[in-house]
Length: 474
View 1 (cartoon, rainbow, N blue to C red):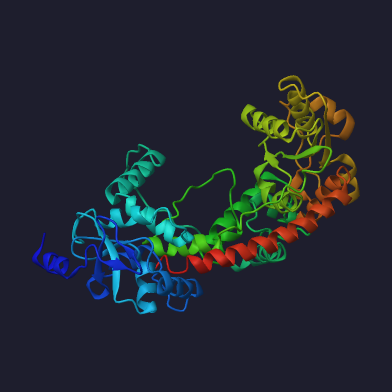
View 2 (view 1 turned 180 degrees about the vertical axis):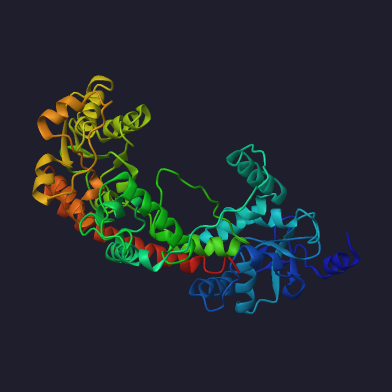
């Protein structure tokens, strides 16, 4: 025992009366000035607030009855358990406090862990619980786990090669200006649907075809591979020169993965707190007697489908042609978990030999391969009737190698039509109407109203939690 501790021990009043009772064995009565709050406690827990009504009530109780549970301290007098009792005793004007010593000093490496263990069983705020758990974490182990996770996620072996030669892209001439202006007008009109695909821009140009080259009257843009090639070439040059923002156009068939990295935990915590409880989705379709899903033929319409699907809370699958087996199995699992007995598919596919068959083939597979007997499908777009009503520009000829070409040509003719030929807002309206034609809209409106109440409740919870955790990143 240190000299200071021995000196303090001599000043204790062992075995003396305290508020009308004899102290039990192992408990000593110490001058309150010889007991010290642990600075580490304030890092883990909220420091006692003398304005707290509960603390004042505790002070009144101590003034009348004394401290009923001894304060636990180290050999050198620092508090392990009892900071609130200590603060209340000072507020009550107590000169002595009953204490029990642990055989440890405040400079011991296990001091903070013992401090936490003594406080585990009391009721704590969320931020105190988080700080308490952080004490248990070995930084080296945590960092190694983080690095190992990154290694596994980024395990790609490549060989580097030398970059040879230079490529200079031709500048955009004034003769290309009408062509470029037509593209820019489309991008501005469809800004809410960014990023667009090259194919979407292609079909929008067909509505009012510009000249590809201003000095060549016979260069009117048309639905032909040569025109499409000129479009993609100009889009590339326009993005490189900064005329068109890169975020305006994408290629969904070539996904890119990036890492959401931070320089320190603070901005990450702030972002997570800002987004806390904002990912809630009420199951708007739960009361519906059927389970509904959307099936899209291609990735290029994802930005059009997603806003509609999210509004109704309906899952959607993009098959990129005929969907592979895993998406079908996942749909079967979603359907099984609903406990409903009917599955309805709403399909969006091109008007071509394959597009006419995709929804039927998918539904048949769900019935025959996955045992869903009660299944129906509806092709919302693109249909022969819509092609005629909208006056869509004819596309390329049906592929000669398609096994379904003959049947398609006999019924519809040789030309095929793509979904991108429909104005995005019109396609969204078609999809919405298809959904509302098969669900119970009264039940849906009731769920929408409840979701508004849910959002208000979660907003209140989020505000409260953010207040509690406001200082955690400081």
